Image 1 (tube, rainbow, N blue to C red):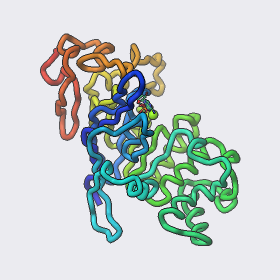
Image 2 (cartoon, helix red, strand yellow; image 1 turned 45 degrees about the horizontal axis):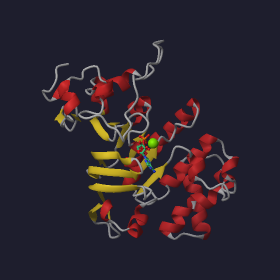
Image 3 (cartoon, helix red, strand yellow; image 1 turned 90 degrees about the vertical axis):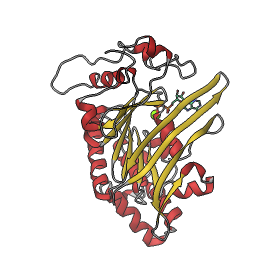
Length: 335
Ligand SMILES: Nc1ncnc2c1ncn2[C@@H]1O[C@H](COP(=O)(O)OP(=O)(O)O)[C@@H](O)[C@H]1O
Ligand SMILES: [Mg+2]
């Protein structure tokens, strides 16, 4: 089955804090097709997690609020008919039926998603109990099956262990098992490997690759590691200060990054075998409470001119569905 799974249009999620309004997500739009992997990249604080948590309606309120946009999710109803639902229009009871079943999430630090006082079996079984009303031997069988899917050795024994008895990498596998247990159509993985050391990261990435191919679920993969994007993703959205500044196929973005920010991110990727010093992008991402006028990236951009300082750049198509938001491409400045 192909076609669109999720379409986010002009999403706006703001935090109303004492000092003002933090527009953490400010008019974000993107699409993901069934069975595809979309990378969401950008420096810390640019709104990646808030975008992801908005899809699941897990924004803490107050101070957060989704103030605009739509999140269209296409899925099958109980009788197998395809329907398109705006997740923002669902009641909290209705959205709970989606979480963990049609859309699920794997977070960076499994210690925060796993409860230390319950066994692994108990926690991995939760989605089955909740959504599929399983119990007894049928439940046990399902738990062991899903632990096998994430390649945890001796699942029938480990089922009785507690989170602290697992290594970091194994805990992330358990957390992934919970995420994929009900075969969601969309898995959101928010920096799933960031807390792990490099060899464990590689193993976990392989697992993601395998699970994705076996089950054909779509994944939104949040990461600041462009190596991971190159390996796993079909498309990538580059976020800066609450907005998507470039959206494109991984093939094109790695070959010809368009936005100066995307180019800078690319140059900061360490390349195997090259001894080039890892350089980071100069300057800091802006404080979202005090955004500069015009393009938010101009204070760090070597191409910026007057136009960039005055007006936020419009969307310019590059090729296919790819686009960039930069005056260099819409006749405002010369590069
Ligand atoms: N609960 C909150 N209260 C106030 N501001 C928040 C809250 N959660 C996130 N933010 C703000 O939203 C912005 C984006 O955060 P986030 O999406 O977590 O960034 P990242 O791209 O690193 O995942 C940050 O500037 C952060 O300060
Ligand atoms: Mg984050």
